[in-house]
Length: 332
Image 1 (cartoon, helix red, strand yellow):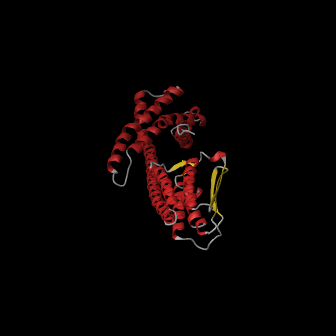
Image 2 (image 1 turned 90 degrees about the vertical axis):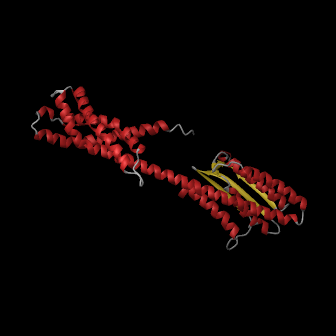
Image 3 (image 1 turned 180 degrees about the vertical axis):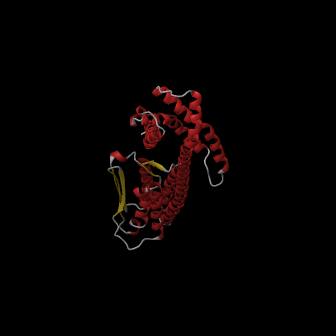
């Protein structure tokens, strides 16, 4: 799904939220407005609850239109730990202009929509001037909401940047670990069979070429499995007739996105700390299936369970767990 698709629904949802908030505000202001009209001796014909609600709602229409503007201005001039006076002064100066404009526009809309121009425009302007002082809390509330949105956006951005830095550090950690273990395995074979060790070095160079290139944090499962297959081919050279591989992948999950270098540490642990320690070798089984909206990946060997694990196994598994935690949280 393309990222541009949800933009229109998001905009519509935000607009509906703004309109609904001001409708609720109008409903809350209607009873006190009716009470004020009664106390000032307004004609009974003007005290209809529905008419008063419509009158108040129309007065809030300019505020509806200004809400996105004020929210944007609040994000444009955020109040931060290091800078507060300047953005507050700018927003206050803007409020001095926008608040009376919104109030006067509301009065004007009521005259145009209801057709009840009981006063001349000079009187309406004076009333709008006085009402502007009572409308200052509206502007302050909008600015506060915008500042809150800006704060949470900055917090989310910091979290994303920290998570990205942590992922890069974890990815940088796993690559030397992979190289160190593989070179050790090749060196052990080199004493017995130089030709096989040379072929393994050639296979390792191909893996390193793919590994040291630009790799995103998440790649398609088919690309991750292609890298793992190359790694398994390398160990098939190092362990002739001792390593068997079984792979079962549902066709529907080939394009699923997974963290880069996710399966390799698991396969490495299954081989180095399991199959390679058995004289007769063993089998590595990889499976990928869809479970509802989740992708289930499994790596198994047929070596018997051992109490405890070596430091190498702990490093690889801990790295995988941390990367999944950073990327997916509890959904891992």
